[in-house]
Amino acid sequence: MQKLKEKAAFRNPDEFYFKMINSRTVGGIHRPKPEDNKYTEDELLLLKNKDMGYILQSAQSEKRLLNWNGEKSIKC
Picture 1 (cartoon, rainbow, N blue to C red):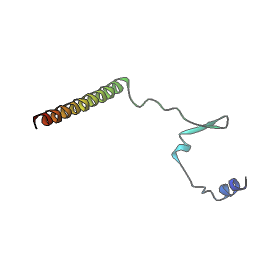
Picture 2: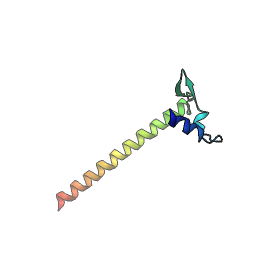
Picture 3: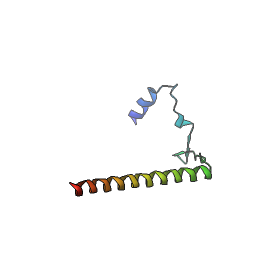
Picture 4: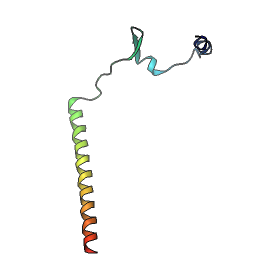
């Protein structure tokens, strides 16, 4: 308890954190405020499609690399 009192005494009164605005306490428990969804459903669908495209492209390039290395080792 003594450490908490010392910490409170040395606290900067001008101290500010954005989390102070973006959170609240409910029944003594610290809870962040619920955030609204940043993206619309169309934007989320577009992001998911881009992610799938990236994964498919990565898999395809990896497959090509494996095929190229396999052909090279067979010829030599």
